[in-house]
Amino acid sequence: MPGGMAANGATASSTVCVQLPPDQCPGSLQQATALFSRFGDIARVDMTLGSTTGRSLVTFFDIRSAEKLISELKGHAEMF
Image (cartoon, rainbow, N blue to C red; front, side, top):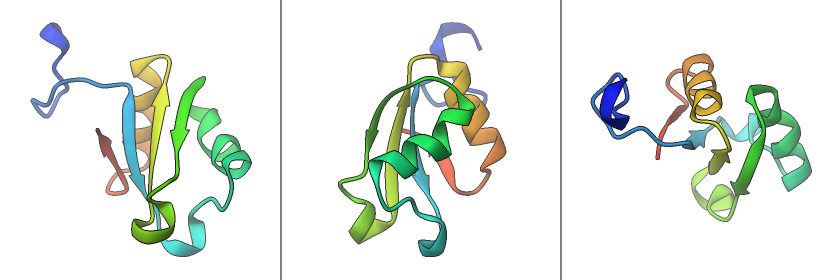
């Protein structure tokens, strides 16, 4: 979208907040990388809130990878 805006009107970002059910949350950085790398090259994964909130922050090098993750994990992922 023009002007760095996402389709929902939010500012576009290559960082995604992902909240998965407890039985699907990655337990390690290696597991998170394996899970999310299918969407694109990962710049950073932050799992510090994972144990208390079940959320992980995933930053991609390319915003299209973030958009792909959000599209595929509807209801579990949003721009951050």
